[in-house]
Amino acid sequence: MIKYDFKKDYSVDELDFGGETEEQASHKVKFVEDNLWTKLERAGKKITFAKDIKALFYYMRDSYIPWYRKAIVVAGLVYFIVPLDAIPDFAPIIGYLDDLGVITSLLKYLGKELVPYYKY
Image 1 (cartoon, rainbow, N blue to C red):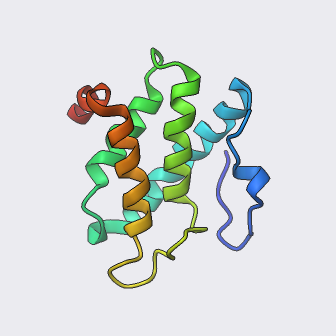
Image 2: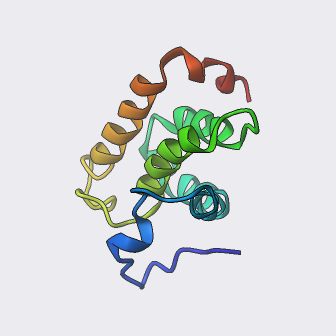
């Protein structure tokens, strides 16, 4: 089971999605599966876009979605999970603005394709 070590500084290469294979992308999917719920629990009521993150998660888990579409969603979810943000999450009020921007971009990109995944 892959767990993010919050004391370790991950290199860009370890979290990069450029030109990777399906196998490499599936490794990052596992990372998201193992760490997303912990991050959502910690964020608690600080964020209003938790339902969007859950929909993205279920989209990522759908076996009918091609892996290269999943890789885009996984990249956004990894950004949400990993504390290496443009704006640190512990900053009052504005800490989750960069995460919101990434998630909103994903929602805009996927459009109506994501609607069925809000039912979960």
